[in-house]
Image (cartoon, rainbow, N blue to C red):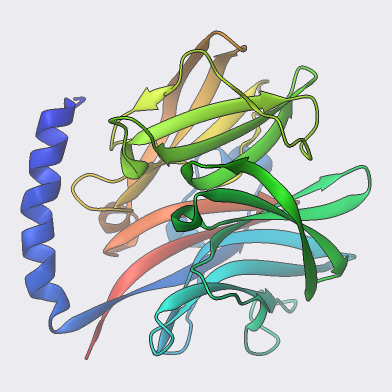
Length: 300
């Protein structure tokens, strides 16, 4: 049964109090889940069939995005090192057994927190749009030497605290979905949309219905929007009740125009139900691979 927003707020407040006590003795660490799936399985994933890929104990890996260079897959992640105290974008090359070929290599390490390294290709060129919400910009980077060298081009959006920007093309328009702290909307409950004639545009038009979604259950993006085998598009969304990143859902986009939006849930799970984990909040697929993240508690 759907919960209204006041009840969602109450559950999150109560859980935060419990989490503070737990986290005094344990550290919440995000790690990866990787495996081979069919396209149909991607629409209703089983995280238990994926293989855990664990980072070193002093850091976490979250928000994974896949990309291929020939036959070899790479995973770009937010790598948060506890000693540094902020996120950076790092990459892992995977071998034939879908295990890292070596340690994660930083590719964007700036004097600000970076996460959610969204990747897309346009006119034969690879781009990245990492999250840097606290700087109130959505910045675009171009790959100059895959996978290690990236150059900042310009800001797609400025003057807005936006998180998890996710770009895709639909019916001749490019769309940018994100969460945003705007008006009374909060990052973990909102879905905003902007559209333009090119993903490189500096001028994005807000959807007339913004925010399209306001719910801690499903608002914030949780990975790449992908095609449904039955037609249409599927949007991953975060479930942040009772805590941030608790679970993930998939939502079939039934209507998307500059003035209208409608979606419906086709699958949902959470970390506890999927594998006994504390949280699970992101997924991405490329070719026959699926990558997700999950969170566990490490004793101090």
